[in-house]
Length: 167
Image (tube, rainbow, N blue to C red; front, side):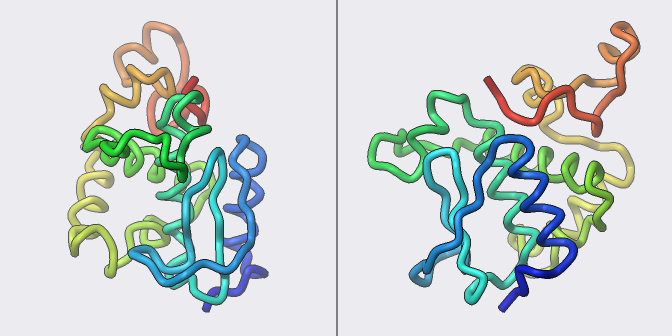
């Protein structure tokens, strides 16, 4: 059980609210991701079942990299059975990394040992080296800028985000 009063959880929930992702507390049946469920433009959370609070940021990443039209369909039978795609998955991972940096939380908050099919260390190692797999896709979505474009436009490069939600 994760305390909703923890500093990290409060920080994440406030951030998500500020960028337009609602977090709604409700009882959730046991599932693949304990204590979390995605809905239309929102994340449902069951603090009594949540094991890893960083999963909240990763799930928010899925909503953030989904088009605004599709975001309204998440959690309904109208969303494509192919959602999220592999591209969505890699950009959600990268988005959550940027959110961690923005919130000044440790990478292990999201990339905990029990997640990412035991590849959390691999992600952390790559991010520490500036290897941002999926960055061109995240840039194409209009959420951030790679080094070259950021330099041309005199803006901050990734992991700084130009905006947090895809249009």
